[in-house]
Length: 632
Image 1 (cartoon, rainbow, N blue to C red):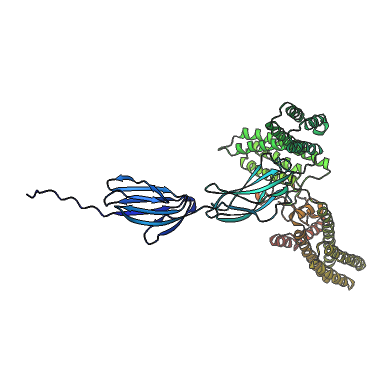
Image 2: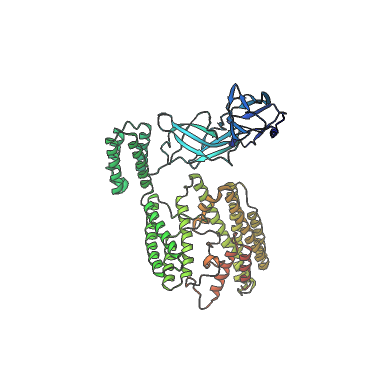
């Protein structure tokens, strides 16, 4: 008997896939295990995955002496996984036969390296420079500097985050510049240590460096006294009797803070807080209050008026940006801005009078006149009353720019005594140059009048020529002296001054021979050389003193930005330019004479020659003046 039984389906061939996936932070690709590479090395924390399908029977997986169980995910398909924290031998078996053997080495992730590349230093502006470097096998995710108080290491550390270039750099270096003058450890010695962290959370620390943190320099004695109390609290917050008594004594000195009730109440309340509350948060609260009061006393009423002016400015800017702007609202806010501006300028004036200092200059060396700011605000109101909204908006933009310049000039660091002394010498020499330009222009004017026959008497012409020859000789001597003095100040003599002295000598000889035309030509060359010398002097001082020194010089201290007396926003004749420097200001500030006498014509010609000697004129401006001079 042969029964007809159905034949069993043949077993599918067995397939094995094994791979290791490194942690994501390493950026490494998954590693496929095959029999051709029996030894592999992978980072710690990698994930092992083994998949078996087909064949008969359940597979077995052993790693490092332990059995890793499989789970059946489908009929005949199995999967197993394992997190690798240590190395070992990996064996995969099925049906009593080994399907794969591998030796797996696990590389432990080393902590990152953090180190100082140089000692921490202090910048002239009061910031701390921290030169650093970091390195890690797979990248550093964060870097911070932790600072502990030397006299009280148990105090909470001050942490400063340091930005890293790129995303998780494996190696980087740089210099962190941080301003810590407002932090509680300012002015005290701290132990600084860098801490770098990698993706797994491991931390690498640098060696400890002790440094004294810079602190803000308060000019007001009362503010300095408050900061001294604050520093004492930081050093030893448990000893509060002396700081509380000191605050009571400071609160009693009403004249030191101009009787400000808010400052008085804050000091008395802080003293009471230190007496009744012995907790650490109370000391921290007192430290914050003392810093705020010290800033308010240092800045004085000026800080309040500046804040009020900024609020008024923002409100007006918002109203003008409306579509369309409401004329009534804009007019009301413009009046409020005028009042805030007047109070702020008065506060600035009071502060400067106390320091015996002039109104500050803008970065372009222009004297910021309070009257100019007030007139601009008044003109805005007039434009609004006349319905000229576009003109009012342009005036407001100019006013905003002037206010920003005023703030930058007021908050600028005062120049050193050496810089001030050098600026005074430079101002005197630039003023001497302008005097030479003016006198040489006068000689040219008189020589041309003689050439034109304006002096008919030969004896009078000869006498005038002799006087001009003596004046020319004196100007030549003065030019040589100026060249020597400026050479001693700047380190080199401008070649223009040397050429001017030579041309003046030629003019004096021509005057001695009675040759007015030759004298006038030589005097014109001398004037052009003086012009070039003035430009060289300005460039030399700019290189030696920088932009701050140039603003301090102010071109003779007369509030004008150019040797010819032309302020920014003026054309070559000294008239104010229109908005954005386009066109002219068609106001009634320029008086046009009804008639012209010979004296007036000569004065205009002399003025034009002085203008043309300005070393800062552009080629277009100089050509314009030369065209005007042809008429004379």
